[in-house]
Length: 112
Image (tube, rainbow, N blue to C red; front, side, top):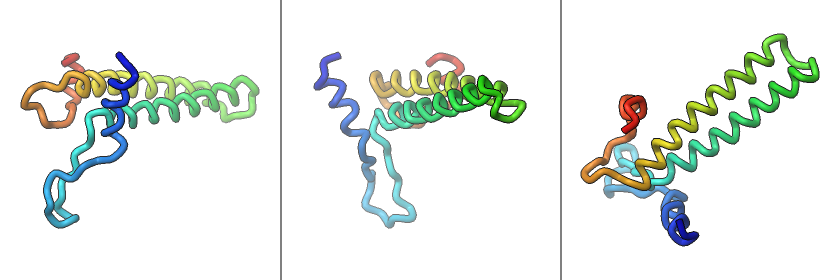
């Protein structure tokens, strides 16, 4: 993928757009295609730092008794976030014609 192509995919995700000029309380906000991907990448970064923190504390023997379990839990959540990120990337890069709804858990489980 060329640099300008990736910028074209990411740039719209910086801000959301409003789909209709109705009052603020009832207005529907639609996210740009790459918004979910960027948000999930952020989640993965946070989860990896949490995993590293718990693993480090466990290694030094400074954390709680369940530090290793907490590190593993963060690693599991990070893997789940990666699965969701890949599904969101697929959806953003290859949107289905007429598909306007959010990604469902069923779609992710089925690999759609």
